[in-house]
Image 1: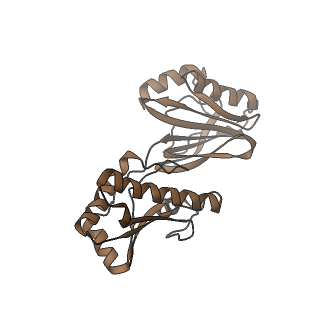
Image 2 (image 1 turned 180 degrees about the horizontal axis):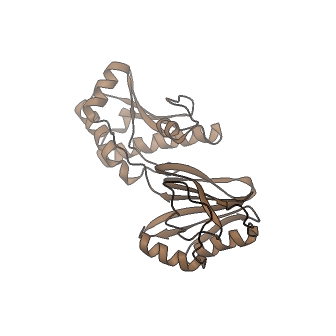
Image 3 (image 1 turned 135 degrees about the vertical axis):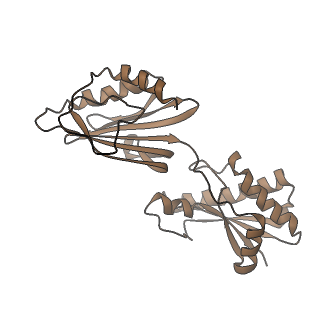
Length: 277
């Protein structure tokens, strides 16, 4: 996003005067670009950022909405001896800041949290402000696909199939909870097609895998739909005979890593090719 434009708009939107803070911010932490002006009398007590992370934003009725992309977390704490503003004042400030730049409020729980999204420079950004016990927590996800640094080529896939009978293919992307293959999957699919064209007798089971977030039955159906979507893409866009491919869904039943953090979940969300006898 254009950080300079965002800072100007949101500084005006929040309408908060610069404050001389009684306590110093945690070293290395700064106000997020989306909300560059903080509530008076608060200092930054913690922060975190990641180039790619997932976060489950609150939604009405206890539900959550997962978003993935560049993640920013900032924790503010009220300075000693200062009076914490009313909850409605805190949340209304962030709500107004978001809506005044064209954002939309997605949900709110009075006295606790508010969140929503805005499109800046063509990219969707989700933000959530939460408060309690003298603290304010800001979480922001600038949506985007994880940068895939390693995509196996056709030769490497062939070697793995000969050695173990299966190979995991990373670099095939789907939106959360959906089965449509995203355009940025093309480099990986090109290599799978190259593998199949280089060995006309090769027949593959295309197996969809998910992480363990959500219900097992839902993940099984999603994994099946994704496997079938990959097979269809290879047939329709690359000219592979449909009889050479068969899609199956393993869902969360065969993890290759733990599901306790996003790094492990990302490894479990994969497509595997299994050599048919």
